[in-house]
Length: 122
Image 1 (cartoon, rainbow, N blue to C red):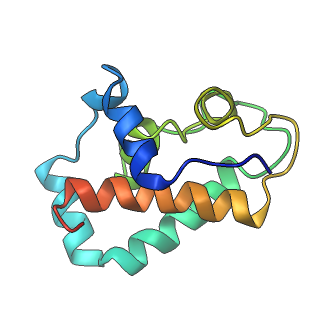
Image 2: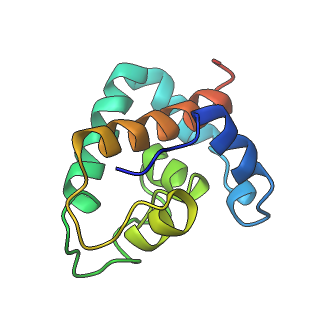
C-alpha cells in the first residue's frame, strides 16, 4: 500500500481540479442521503468499491462507474475514485492488484468525507 494523504488534503487537491470540482449532489441525491442516513450510504460505498474497484482486473475499467443513479457514483467521480486509472493518477494505487482492506477503507473514507461536505455535515 502506498502512503496516502489525509482525507482533507485530498479534498483540497481535488477542489483545484475544474473537472472534479464540477460534481455536486443534486437536491434529489441529498434527499436520498438524508432518507437513508450516512451509515447506509457508507455501506453502499463499500459494496460498490468491493464490486467495481477492488478486483485486480476489471473488464470495463474506466466505464464501471455510472455518472448518475446514486450519490456514491457522483462522489466517486468527484473524488477520482471511479476507476483504477483515476486511483493510480490521483492516489498512486497501482492497477493490476487487488485492493487491500486499507485501500478500500481509505477510498470509502474519501467518498464519505466528500458526501458529508456536500451535505454540510463536516
